[in-house]
Image (cartoon, rainbow, N blue to C red; front, side, top):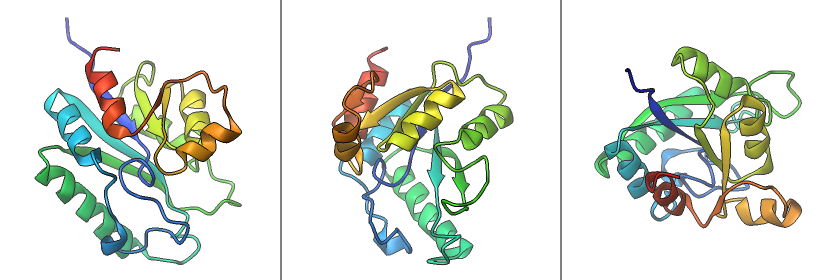
Length: 182
């Protein structure tokens, strides 16, 4: 019997790297959260495909362009690779908050696009985020939303204390839980 592929879906800002109210506009502003690169490396080494699902409204706001975003993602991929991990794919929404797109979280479009392209069900796939819109997108898509307290996670918990989903200190803590066989 063929085993199903294993994936972990991750929000970017606030989960993998430190977030900024001024947006991450250049590679030098992309700074990993302590333990996040190691978490991705451990998940990768244990057979999980890592997929990043991220809103990037800074493109629509013209705070940076596609070349800058590509450079940021190249730095992220290289940093993960240097730690021994691999990012399988990156899905991003380039639209602003007022756009009528289906890909901006909390809508589930990016997660559904991943599932379609990888021909996999989202059921049982963790989607780790730091904001309520991540939780909403994961739930709407049929994934398993997890929340980390890094980035906007503490504020999300304060506003929504009864989420009823697993909550972790950071991505490393969440990866330990996943690797324990949850």
